[in-house]
Image (cartoon, rainbow, N blue to C red; front, top):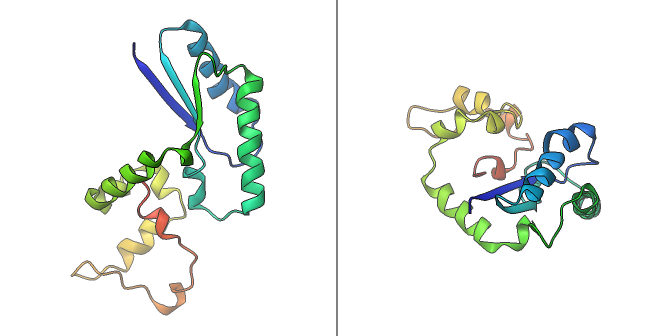
Length: 149
């Protein structure tokens, strides 16, 4: 049986677009029975931007409740929290060591995280070292942005 894996970041309350674009399809695929469905709350993915720990906990709980309220059934699908699967972080580390920045620069999601690549390409020396002028030293750019799989 083919396996279907999909997740949603806990970044705020779900809206009708989330329901129509993702959750409704998740439930339909689950009910068709042709897939081994695994749906997850992508809490690790959501940590690449600033967050309040208490609010993040609430968002995780809320999204999990929304999964169930939309009709995802733990008896028919596997529903899990990404951070509770150590293999995810372990695989991220392995991919991190072999993924070239050029590959990341072609990924829309990576570029959207704040225009960091423009800064990197503008301030890279011939040797490949990052040369950030003093006025850019204080930018709050998390290293997680650079090693996000």
